[in-house]
Image (cartoon, rainbow, N blue to C red):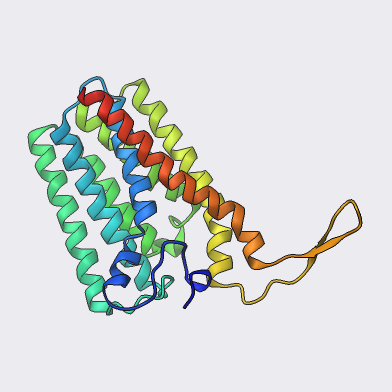
Length: 243
């Protein structure tokens, strides 16, 4: 399988350890964990330990549980990981995330349990497409994987959500919506489209053929770029708060 034929730009050839790398969706996982750092960094207070725990919880919930459940639904990444292993990854990830949240509630504020409950419900309802897929939409994706990480992180720092936290969460929500706008057609082209035909006629009368790669190039390049930009931005904000 060539890079052009793979189900995602970051996917490796199927088989062995490569499947587990692909399952993690590394660029997107790093992207969404960046929202945790952004939310923490706009808080009035900043505690590196709390940030680390929040990042770990969302890595377990999103990087492991959400992606394992997603792969169980039709094998969109074409991995060969056995179903029982995917279920084990999903359960261990979710239990670990909830455990971190409960410890955080004991140490920080019992209100954190509300965020734990929202995240737990969201990862199950979204990825298993419960209630007829009512929660499996672009808006819910942006709320669960964009706004919620930022809100949780800022609350974990301040035990409250102040205006900068709400603004940061709104920004993360809209960035996530933009991500979906770019990634949805790219996924379709890589995973569902068999053939693309047609041509573009230029002003000088010349024509050139349209290929699947042409349609995919711009949105995929934007996704690659943003998947680097968001972690760098988050890293800069964390470095600033640690100085």
